[in-house]
Image (cartoon, rainbow, N blue to C red; front, side):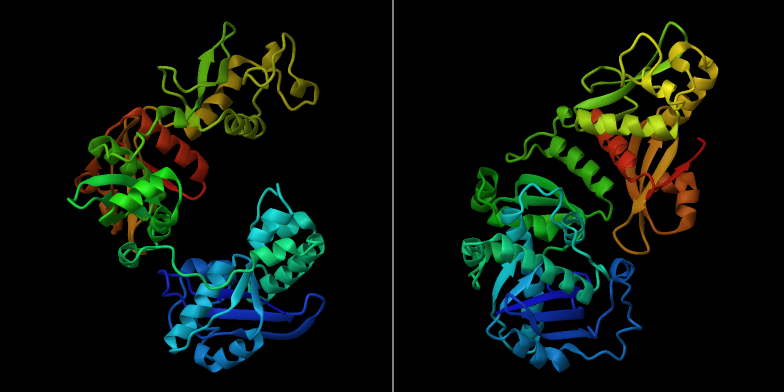
Length: 456
């Protein structure tokens, strides 16, 4: 017997989340025998990003039952059942935490449809519930609501049961409650860490930094280090004495601080940030006819690229985007080698720069608009991103095309007054790694970031 469920929560710090909605379907492998669906008053505020994701807000939950009022029903419908969920470790942890707050132990066997799907339906582009069900043609309504996601998981689980003819994988995948793999001394370190974006520093018993990293969830990343079985994780587990951290809010700030501080501290377990992480760059040159040409080339060149990429495939995808958006020429962007007109000219999607039908002035104007959008060469600008708290923002400063440093502000006048802003900035190196990090991050997050220009 299975209890297929989905839980929505308030979000927030690890093990401090509260349930906002739960849906459970009791399933015997053939049909649904019972069900329980309810909103739950978590008696704590919901994180704003969760409200946007689920549509569940504090007002909706004001008159909903509290967990202790539905706990008996949840206990009974899941009794003698294997809990099935998409990423069951999360849902099961939340339920155990809620029952623990009431002073009760909640123990069930679990099955994870993410893990089962990876075994039974390999090579899918994504195993997130939304994308996986879409790929498999499973209808899903009310995405990110407990009932909609639970119903979709029921349909997915039926499909997985049908694929596992010998039922061997299902049997092997059933998990009993396991003892923690984390040593007690490491467990106490994790308890004090935040589930937030930032940079973390792993120290040995004399306080020296042996490893520096960044993560969008520091607690989760350290847990992975402490439970991992690769050589780096084992060395960390053997040497770690304490972990300190610095919240950044912004992933860009975390990336830049990680890069800078690895170079300064040279921790023994860090592999130095390598330039070939950004293997390809987008470069420009003017041909004999006066047209600005674009080329994807190795990022090891001495010239500063317009922007950088981790591989040629992502660079090519970006050029194809520019081709459509700015009406550029396949031939002059290096996507097509031809001595005559490009293929798109025959489709009337190129204005003829490839055969000098369009003037260099007109074509180059569009190329310049494209370059201006994705390069900060000779620019003075502020890249504004998330801060460490709701009222705060982070800022990365570019002056005359050079990275000057980063900082945080919480009042509008601080960013509007350049002298005040510069006093808040921590100076940092304008090295090639940092340039790559900024260019790549801005390109990937341009729609979300706020970018302000300024005059010196």
